[in-house]
Length: 131
Image (cartoon, rainbow, N blue to C red; front, side, top):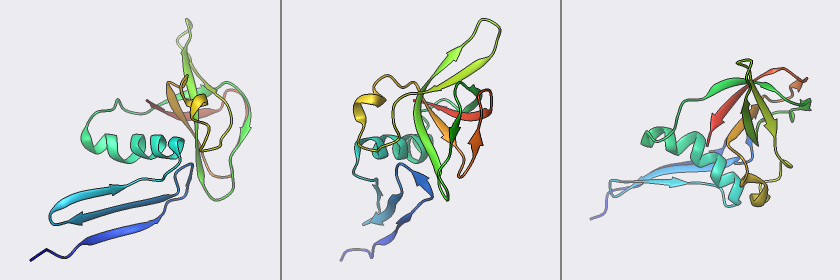
C-alpha cells in the first residue's frame, strides 16, 4: 500500500517565482518550482540549493542604480556584482524583471533583492545572492 502524500502548494511573496510547492510521496521528497525559466532559476537558488548545501552565502552590496520595488512582494532582479579597487561592492541590475527573459540571466552573477515597495537610490545597501 502507498503511504499518504503530505504536500503544500501555495504562493510566496516574491517576483519572479510566486507559486511553489513541496511534498513527500511514498517517502520521497518532491519539490515543485514555477514554470517560467527565470522563476525556476530564482526559486531553485533561494529555496533548493541552500538545502542541498551547494551555494555560497548571501552578502550585501551598494546598488549601482536607483530602482523601486513592487508593492507586496520582494523582487529578485538578475545582476552582476562589481568588486571595486577601493574595497566597495556594487550591484548592477541586468535587464528587465520579466520571468521569461532567460537570455538576460546569462550574464548575471548574482540575484539582487529589492524589498517590497522599497524606493532605493544609488548606493543603497542591497542583499545579493551569488548564482
